[in-house]
Amino acid sequence: MTTDGGAEGGGDGTAAYADLGATTEDAMEIAETSMDRVHELVPQETPTDRLRAKAVHATGDPEFAHLMRFANDPVAVGAEAVLDERPIVTDITMVKSGITGRGHDCEVRKAIGNGAELAAETGMTRTAASVLELDERGVYDDAIAVVGNAPTAALALADCIEQGTRPAVVVATPVGFVKAAESRERVREVAAEHGVAAVTNVGRRGGSGVAAGLTNELVHAASDVRNGETTLDALREESP
Image (cartoon, rainbow, N blue to C red; front, side, top):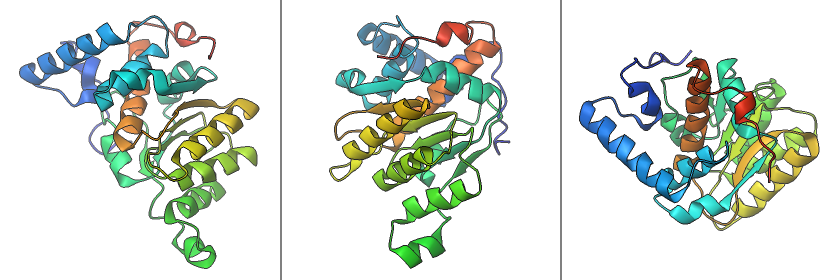
């Protein structure tokens, strides 16, 4: 369970943008106006447009909508995983801190802090070792796996998938000039090969805020299903 309640918002519209952290009247007005402007830039015509819009909102960059890549119906699969209260596993603390505590009852945990002995023995990064140690415990199977910072965590997760691990959905937007784009490409390849739902982007950009925002949109989609505003079937589409 989430430590800050995990409760669904009330019927006054607050729940609609709980993932943005807005609860007061002024904050809600800002949040709703912001998303209205984003939706002018990213029309909501397909389920994955929800994620494109969220990426634009998280970065303030309309071009980010064109950098997003999707595999195997991630909105529907991610929403279903949230409804099933699957764990959300992030690579680092910053991503974990950005995950909303409302609209779901999923456990939210981070990988970093595990795998210290493996990292010391092998020389691999702490984030990669953390992913591998949690995978040995079966943590990633059926989980919502989120990587927002560390390319080596994304590469390790891709190796785990190739060796049989099956997350419900992967959100991978590690940022940087070294291995970041390559790590996301690797995630896309193994996700496509093994039928795993995935959300990634191309290029050097990305980061913890984007990963958290995209994950929060999966929570938002789950809330819409729960509230009867859409269905899981309606959230499915042919992946480009």
